[in-house]
Amino acid sequence: MPVSGNRRLSVACGVDIGSTNVKVIALDSAGHIVARASRPTPRDEEQLSIDAAVLFASIEEMLVEVCGDRFLLAAVSCSGVGEDGVLVDERLRPLTQALAWFDPRRHRIFRALRPSLGSDESFDAESDAVRTLVGWAWARVQAVQGEARSWVAIADFAGALWSGSAFMSDTLASRTGAWRSLDRRWAEDRVMLTLGATDLLPPVVPSGSVVGHLDSPTLRAADVLDPEALVVAGGHDHPIGGWAADQLAPGAVLDSMGTAEVVVAQSPNGRIDRASHLEVAPGILSSGTTLLRVEELSRNLNWAAQDPDVAVAIRTLMDGAMEPAPVLDSGYFVPGTRGGQLPSYALDAPKDPHARASAVLGALAHLGRDAVGAVLGGSDAPVKCGLPVDGCARRVG
Image (tube, rainbow, N blue to C red; front, side, top):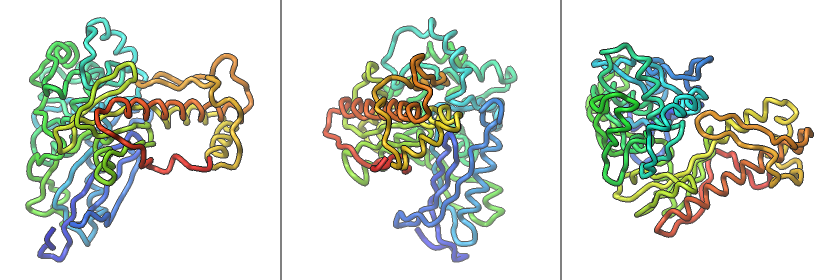
């Protein structure tokens, strides 16, 4: 990247809109991270939902922060949660908040939709309460009638505002429950049932493609914007992370441990295996396929940690300072399912905090193991295990 006339070094910025935190990094022309920032994802304290306008302002503030007086923004790409989004008007102003993928209200909505969805499971993602189509049905009754012009995913929202046009990254289309990467087509019956109109769907673009030029009065006023800056489609954070891991170690399986635990691999061809809860997405910058399986991690741990004694025991076990009780395979802890279904203890679970903490970690370890096995079994090409991230897995504990 060139150095600008005001001696700022041009950088490309990546934005990750996570369930818990929003992260921004700046990369130089050699791919080195030269600056970073992080803030909690702005959510309504009671409803868990995201105000897209507040999120956008926070992202721009972080871009100004990472650029400071040293860097000039030449390109930006946003990735993030796969299912959250909003209806917008003709000026791309949000008409609704974004229903969180883990919001318990999704279960009631999905139960009402389920009889009309049919039995077709050829979509990229499993039909359940997490899917974007549940958010469509919710947003449809929230928005002021007659104003909605498009649906925009939360991960695409900033890029849409900067480029001046709504779009949907294809790895996010995969999360809707109404799109197949095999033929890159929408299931109109599902769209009509939930969103109400196919013309509310923006164009689907490949993750990694240039969407347009970046226009931002805020970034321009801060003197951090290259006049030729570009917006690049990002999409669902986990396929993008899996692609990055594959670039570092071809054939690797990425076990991404964060708010959710997601096991991801790249494959020339992938098959949908609903029995193993395996899902697919388009390959990143390739004609191949992304294989992934999602399990909830943080929400299960946070639920168990509501008991202070169990919380201490979980931390002690994870630090390796204590051996687990012999209950790892007991089934005493029942993990919460996607879409907000709460975890629970079995009726015969012991009350001892050490035993409960061991049962929690044992159950979650089994979920992770099963997810890796499903991804390994779903690929038609050799893959290898490797690259756990985020520091949640420790050898000792």
